[in-house]
Length: 266
Image (cartoon, rainbow, N blue to C red; front, side, top):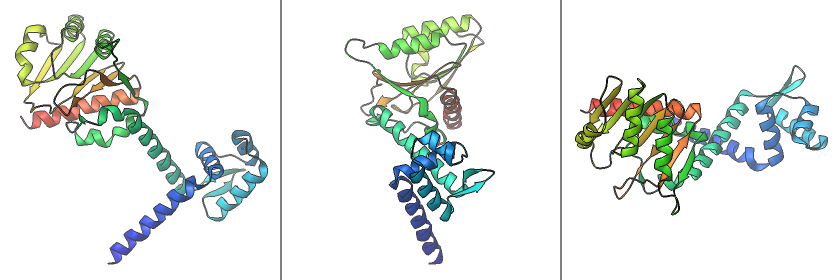
């Protein structure tokens, strides 16, 4: 009973914090400014363009409730307020991310992404949804082909064989560039016919079930992610793409997580 009461009390505290922060845009603006750097009143005024009386009033209230403190001629956020503001901004970033990529999440099979990678999905803040249209139906495939062409190395989860991809993968391998593929066993024969297997072109096969996989292209310069629709057909009209280093690192970890998961079950 005590544990339940404490849980309810903690929830109420968090709920109150979440309601408190966005309730006043002036207060939130000041807190955001101090989150980025400690400042005095004059610096806050210059940064936010708010008038002194509004700043003074908010600062006084924030000091009284322990959200900020004065030290070394500047106002600082308390540790608890810094944590709250940080979480609020992360939540806002995640909501924007989910809104931007919702066309490729809804009605698509993302269950094949390993749990560890799903938990780190919020790192994909600088990712873009590329959509083909009736005038450029091969837009996504051309982007993938060009990304492979410009790569110095590539790790990929390749769920199907495509001639242009194969050509560029062979070209990379011929230049002694590292190419490591994970592909379903049911396309092994096709890949063996179209790819020139060399020491630096490695393919690991796994036993895929239906659409229990996805497309991942991870080069030293770019990451690309594509999914199968719920009807079992790969959605060639939508891909996620990024050149951000954090996104590329996430994609490399996704490759390794998927490899461990699939190879462990073989």
